[in-house]
Amino acid sequence: MPVNGFDVFDGDGHVLEDTDELIRCYEGDYAGRTRATALGLFPGLDGWSRGAMIGKEDSNRKYWHTDAAVWAECLADIGADGSVLYPTAALAHGLMRDVPFAVATATAYNNWLEEHYTRQDERLHGAGVVPVQDPVAAATEIRRCAKDRKNFPAMVLPTVTKTGRTYGDAFFWPIFEAAEECDIALALHGAPSEGFGFDHFTRYISSHTLEHPVPLFINLTDMVFAGVFDRFPNVRFVFLEGGCSWVPFMMDRMDYEFDSIHGVESRRQLKKRPSDYFREGEHIWVAMELGETSLKYVVDMIGSERIIYASDYPHEPTHEDLTGELPEFLASPDLSDEAKSNIVYNNTRNLYRIS
Image (cartoon, rainbow, N blue to C red; front, side, top):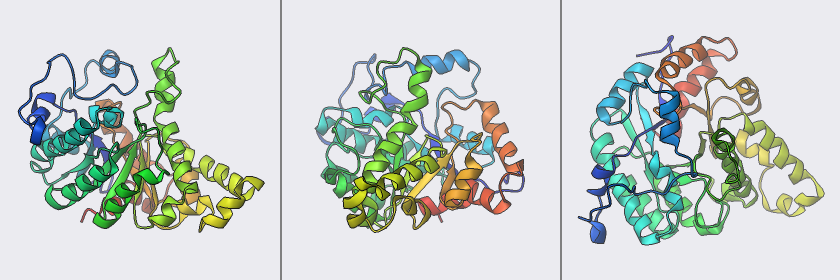
């Protein structure tokens, strides 16, 4: 159902995990185990009680849980043809210290996501979880999801992990090789921040303001200067839930360093200036947030072909935000109709190779 005459495809919605359902999806040595009901499977994202805070500020929200039927209602509310569904609690998967359990949990989560979402409604697509703690096992899980799971066009790379590394490190290359082989997108999704420099904040808003975008461009900077986009030219990396207004700043900042006396080695090693990785090819995709006043400038800098619409529902947006902000954006004269159509529909389908 078009919105203001535009087809819409949501590039970043979310599931709210049901732990009792998920625990039944473990395989091998972990199958059939029980758990302490007061304890979850995943570590906390940042030490803040996010659910309680959302409940305080939006006590009348329409959905306090998700399943395929709820997401069918969400698509009708948005006016979208489909959505790619990302985790909530499992965004902290990279903070799990027990590596064998992290591997088993990734498989269980992906089994659960398929059983309860992607097999229930053709319009729902899954962003799977991979155990980045063990890149060889992660590559195996990517191949399994690409071959044997239904509607899995992307896998999640947690922006903060217990590996002590960022994604320019060759440690992660088996993951990138598998993604390239399977033609599956890799999504760096903001949210976790434990140990990343924000733990001293005494106000949740201070942490939340920075913990989504800052780890994105820290990882991106490492990836650019490590030559990831040259080594894996066919992998599509999407940077989610940090907005897109940071993109021009990082383009300028990396170009400045690249052109300076500090960039001698990088100028020998890289095939392009850093900003050209944003403008050319399909290396870097980014999600916009409705209400970003800098969006037009970002489009002027990199074009509209690799910016996607992300509802983020049912996280921060209220139901009123969900149903009101998108029509307002599409009615705005700031962007051309072509750019709007790219952002809210074409780009998401291109990124995720959804036919």
